[in-house]
Amino acid sequence: MPGLQPGQPLGGYTLLAPLHEGGMASLWRVSHPGQAFPLLMKVPHLGYGEGITKLVGFEVERMLMPALHGPHVPRFVASGDEGEQPWLVMEQVQGETLRRLLDQAPLPPDRVARLGALAATALADLHRQHAVHLDVKPSNLVLHVDPATGEERVVLIDFGLSHHAHLPDLLSEQFHVPLGTAPYISPEQVLGVRDDPRSDLFSLGVVLYHLATGQRPFGNPTSRRGLRRRLYQDPVPPRAIVPDLPRWLQEIVLRCLEVDPDARHPTAAQLAFDLQHPEQVPLTSRAGRDQREGRLSVAKRWFRSLGAESPAPTAAHAAPGGDAPLVMVAIDTKQQDRDLDAALNDIVQRLVQTSPGTRLACVTVMRTARIGMDSNLDEAGRNRHVKRLVAMRHWARTLQLPDHRITFHVLEASDVAQALVEFARGNGIDHVVMGARGVTGVRRILGSVSAQVVAESDCTVTVVRASHAARRTGPAAPDAAGA
Image (cartoon, rainbow, N blue to C red; front, top):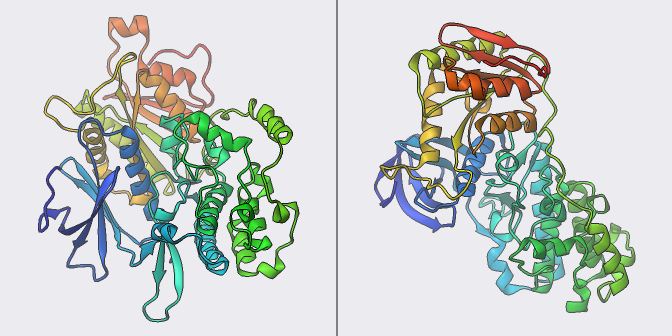
């Protein structure tokens, strides 16, 4: 929705004033008669040429925020779509980000430790909620001061790259490149690991290093090769830059920046404790370093890093119990068939009623060209990705499920069936439900999408037709018949 203006209504809210124009979205201060506290609306950019990562990141945040609570995250208020324009409303956290403090760095050690402890406490609370932020940086850490008590706390913002153990990981399924902010990304994120809370500790260590020294430990690499250097190149010790920096602070910062997550603090809570109790920090050889390690040590780590590659995709979380299955509903939003949509909806209604804990992942695949680039706008100038999200939400409206029990995912792939199979496999799906039309002569020869999903899926698959449903349970048989 281009040309947003103050005073304009959107989703039942009134736009008051623009707050920030980011690379992914516009932030607006908004009002609503039913809410007394300050509100912020995030509106993603949908124009031609906008990266699909931005839209997926917005959907990640819209999916994840309702699952978070507490004093260290903004309160989720509402989300929706106005026509084809998605939006997300949350509490506007009062305070400034730590980004402005970088201009004052190096800061006094006690202040660095205080800010680090506040941020680590916020991360510990987030991790207890089974989420990993994965984009910890100064601009995503808001320092809020309670007006009544004067007490400080850090509030985490921007969850577009985050991972939640009990929600599908859209980003790992759709993108196979390192995702994060280059100066702060952890070594394991460079390798594609997105579910380790200790990645946030590494990123926080980068923040502390910058605040304590005025410099970034790994610069600002612009290539994957540059990112991989942190797998073997250790940073300049902080005390080599600021000689009077306390040894205990160097010990903590360099421990955060260890390549091996096992060498870091086990939890954010333990990191917060060390930062609050420096006299309790056991000092190791890290505390006394005054220069980088020698070429031989770096060379040995470099050779070891050559074998460090991205792990094979695994289930994002353990399969839930029988009373709370994770069901993927594959919906064709392009070739719509009212009778088939109704039959599919009926089957899903029965599954939801049979297992009250069922959570749905509604999925559609936007077919892309095998060679070349596709525009993300259709002939009428509408965003194709958003159109499919809107269509799926329209299909699911009669299910009347709360937001925490249903999510919507638009995949991009040249092979539709393979995309569905990989999504189900990578997200620990227990049951796939999908529609199938009549078998034409071409499909008898080439095979249908549903037949391929039945043959290759590792979970139960229900294939629905307008008049009846055919179900196959258990692992796929090698000679499964076409559907």
